Image (cartoon, rainbow, N blue to C red; front, top):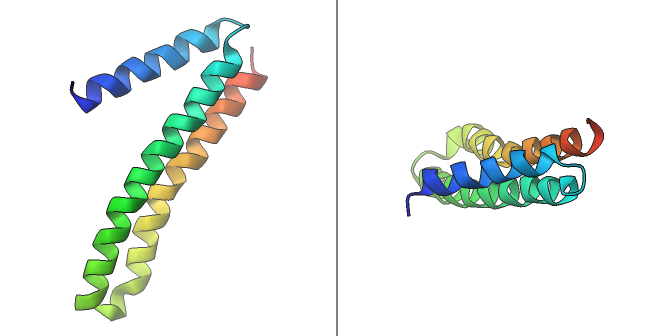
Length: 89
């Protein structure tokens, strides 16, 4: 199955669970878990590319760290979304 289709199904499930008060904990857990998985994949890809590029141009290392940090920010967004699910509504 396509990755975008799986992501769409997961986000739809999160939003549907956030609408009911009994399943908001499950929705918040899914938001953090899926964001953590996405951040892990992103950091893995960006980290491997940064190490490869660091061999060729070591003077540009600050840019490589920024790219890895941008991928890591996805997990923080998932945490913020879970707080919004838990504490609003």
